[in-house]
Length: 416
Image (cartoon, rainbow, N blue to C red):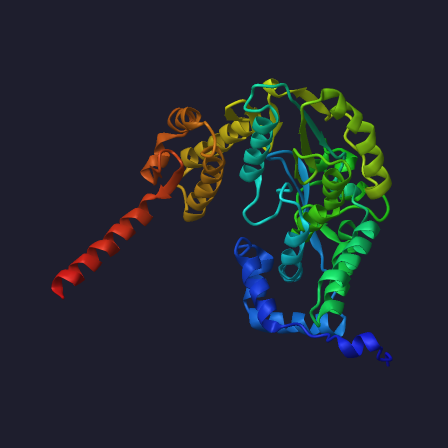
């Protein structure tokens, strides 16, 4: 029998079941139709109480992931965790995110409520405008990223930093469970316990530095997990703090491992390269990507988060345009081959509206109009409407149902 310590007597190995239920409902929002989610949902109350018991008695361990390749927007290796593990991920992040928000600087944009790609683009655009004094003075843009970022995150450094942070900032009685689950999630060898979906040839063309199967010892976080995204942001906060506190750089912004520095002195930006390279290698064991160093006058513009930022205007990058074109071609093939099912229609809305949702934030009205009315098959307009000035597709059947409900309500009011 394990001997109780002072730590055990102060803190409780108890999971708040309401918090676990909340994590479950948050988790299933976007994963409800997956096989693992449906299997868990059949008796989710029993499964959640069983998960609670395993966490509390220390027998919980992450299950098998599904590994596969996606090609859009770029070729990437994805590890989809088992659904019950995703519930644990959400439980952890719900616990820690408020603390991370107090830590993170305003200029990091990934995986944060109220911040994201559009916020990041607007922020960098504002940096350029301010640094150039409304485009009246010279300033320069240095854009960098990390080589094989997720696959080279050192898990030992990450866990030690997280434990130190949690012990200093988390003051709830379940702190021992939080620490324990952090270690289990981060040290989980996903590449050794996975099912490969698809074929091994799908990995052809993916560099080894972008694959968890080829990560250095004790390195790598699986792309696809919520915890990986948030913990990666925490890992890179060390760089953020160095930029702001040690180097006193005002105009700095970062999205995951892509970061931009704006300054009036080009030579100063050049001098940063060896300093940043040494800092990243010595502190985080990361390497600047040698082929992705961009240093130009602001008038040349800069590619950032799917856009091209230029003075007084922001364009959609060619890669996003190309992906949108390919998505339209895919939808055209579906409707020309057969009558679209409900699943086909839902997939159409998800795909098309995701691109329109991105593009509507920038000067792209003519582009959206051209792509939709010249490229998209007219047969789709038997099933969908365009609303909001080419910003969103809506199913016709939903509009019809809504009008019928409205008409019934009006009749009832008249009768009363």
